[in-house]
Amino acid sequence: MKKTAILVSILFVILLNACAPTSTPAPTTAKTSTPSEVPFTPTTPPTATSTPRPRVKACDVLGFLKGMSYVSWDPTNYSHPLSDQSLEALADTGTEWIALGVISFQNDRASLSIDGLIQEDEAVVHAIQTAHALDMNVMIKIAIIFENDPDGWGGSLGETFSPADWDA
Image 1 (cartoon, helix red, strand yellow):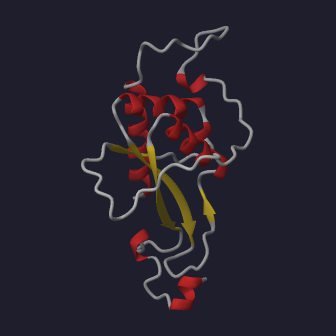
Image 2 (tube, rainbow, N blue to C red; image 1 turned 30 degrees about the vertical axis):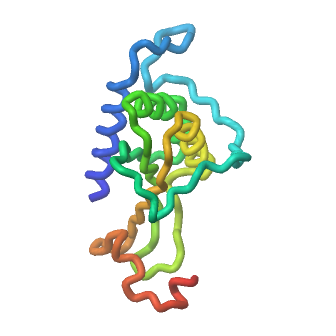
């Protein structure tokens, strides 16, 4: 299952890059670069915006939502310039929402702790802020991978939890 998810993610990124607008001027560099050679300069950690975006409530009638899943399996890809270009390409398609994938690891479905996240917090915040700047809304889509529970899936988390376990 993990290989399939990675393959789907790679194909999605390829599709997004293929759909990037061609009218955007290429970055000026001393040599011709391929997408894998785009220079990456880490940015300073982002800060919270002073004006929060409106929240969607369960009772809101939203009508037809134009959205896409947006996921990366690399810790810093969400803050990479190519991610920004992909989000711009999504916005150009009329996408109004993205489901931003945040992947976590737990030992098994009975574990009470998250053992790690794939994406770095700063990269996730950067992607959220970039999407908001492009007038897209963001839903955080959390995926849980059980490292030592081959029969478990994210929806089976806490099947044996007590109320105290859920509080923990």
